[in-house]
Length: 351
Ligand SMILES: NC(=O)c1ccc[n+]([C@@H]2O[C@H](COP(=O)([O-])OP(=O)(O)OC[C@H]3O[C@@H](n4cnc5c(N)ncnc54)[C@H](OP(=O)(O)O)[C@@H]3O)[C@@H](O)[C@H]2O)c1
Image (tube, rainbow, N blue to C red; front, side, top):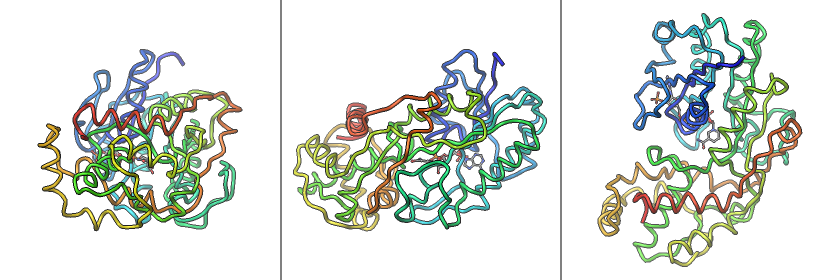
């Protein structure tokens, strides 16, 4: 199959936008991006469609003319709060409506599903490490499982193949999306510095010293493009991380150093409570450093940061499977974190 046509559901989200960018750079691909709202920064070679996947009739009508789709990328995510389990029914419904809506795509060859460390229960508690793709599922309600089971059954009926990617915490530059580890930590550092405080680590001591892994977003997008077009990757899931390991106790002092402030101590707190009322201080910081005028809520998501830095357990994922099948990309997570932090600073989003 030479010319391929991708439909990316969730094309304005963190991962969907990266997949759209990766595929649309390649002239072999025609790319359609789907979301309810129009993108803030549309990519040049992507055709955007605004439709609601929770409304089966509407999305089926809106996608009816797309008969040439060869690859579907499901990067959607139902609206969710932080620090609670994401809803299984609504997430399954979005995927199921999407597949129903592309039912007329006679060239459909492959459907890719984005999962994550949540597949192993990384958000709930300790899990067997290094996590291997084939290990027993965690005993929790998990929309990743329902979506994968649904996809696997639909692929048998439809005669196409599927794959699933499992990245862990993302490292990326995305000023339009506050649910971002780098910008949220950067905003926390800027507020601490403005208050004359040190950069205390807001999670528990065990979280500061546990081993963790991250996934650079561009690496994930390349991994998704690879597994969705590689025949021997069909019908299975793959861990995709930077492959290296780090501890916050190593990275944290480097972040403090970049802001020219002391690294502080481990001082567990809920940033969502402690920093809830700091909007006017953030405005002062923006003025003082001639930053772009943003609301704090546009640059930091405290609930997401609290949920990420509270994990006292190791987050280690085995990479043998992707490597053995031919994907060898890796990244230096600490260096990439600092590089993206600098990007936020030099582009006027952080001081
Ligand atoms: N972000 C991370 O740090 C991370 C890390 C590892 C794994 N993951 C996994 O990756 C997957 C994608 O997550 P994400 O964080 O990239 O998602 P996200 O940034 O929240 O984006 C969700 C996308 O889905 C679209 N969408 C939501 N509801 C829709 C609907 N009813 N109809 C049509 N489009 C809809 C959104 O656009 P509209 O709102 O405009 O519709 C947006 O484009 C999830 O399974 C997540 O668990 C995420």
